[in-house]
Length: 429
View 1 (tube, rainbow, N blue to C red):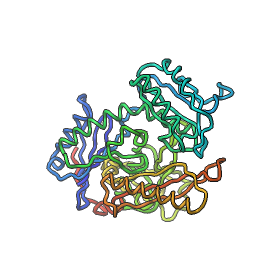
View 2 (cartoon, rainbow, N blue to C red):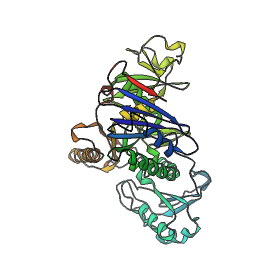
View 3 (cartoon, one colour):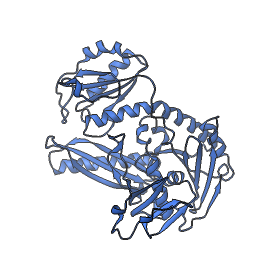
View 4 (tube, one colour):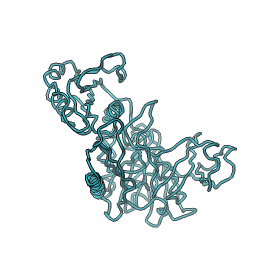
């Protein structure tokens, strides 16, 4: 049996997916004793505590704290500071420390790294600060970012250092913005991962623990503290996946009612269609996410067959939606989606390739890395499948510079996991 758990500030919902495709749903309020105590009570419920649980997947997007703690300093490594400091991108009120250095997108050094200047500036960074380091050309050659981090940590080990080259994207600003948000999430993510792992480990020591991701997949819970930004927006994607599982859908479009919103998304080979960047606060983040768009009458006009609609039981639909199949449910779709989510992994990066043979070699190597990581997550190699494997041209770059995108998943397609129409389930809450 596998369990999906949707954690919110006021309640925790769990859906247990049995081997025969039937479901059991449980829900419990979160009181003043905290999330870990509520999870302890939930996992002790009859039907869960006495079951053979193989895996538990948590969706934590509703409780990951995005406010951050402590002062922030941004270190930008480039051949020269901007000509007009007034036009440079700001990160709130965070001070920006400019350091000479940087590489081309082929990994060649543009200018030597100014280690002396950074050491001289390091005492001005408050103790316990979050530091985000972004270097020009670091996606290919991160040596200057790494050297800067080493200098700062040697000066003050209490600093929390995040490197922008850990995030994919041609945009310097997008990578930096993603790293800043990720650094703010880390303390909360570390605390959650430890407390949930301790509780679940006591109840089910043999179960593998996972956390959902923005792309509608899941990865080991141990990866959450490193890059929590990839799980901070997973809720909509996972709810959409839960709706697809309820409909037995692996391919095609699906409508989902989320509160007062109606969204449209697509399934491809049992996983949501993906966009390479996520919109957040009028900007972009370098994280893969399910492609869900607001559904409108114009957008749906002429679609045949008309997408099925999944909505909470008793909810109403807009009049313009007209006919079409409607699936109503009282299940927590976020918990159901977590239980059904496939293992997911990506190989993303900038590479240099001068001919077709080199390009094919880079793509094969990326696919091999993805398959190996999925196997390391606990997936049988026979269930791993590559959903996307391609090159993307990089704008305004050297002809040899290309971007690799490989997406792999593992596990049974979501459309065949449940027993079928009218899947039997028990609700305990």
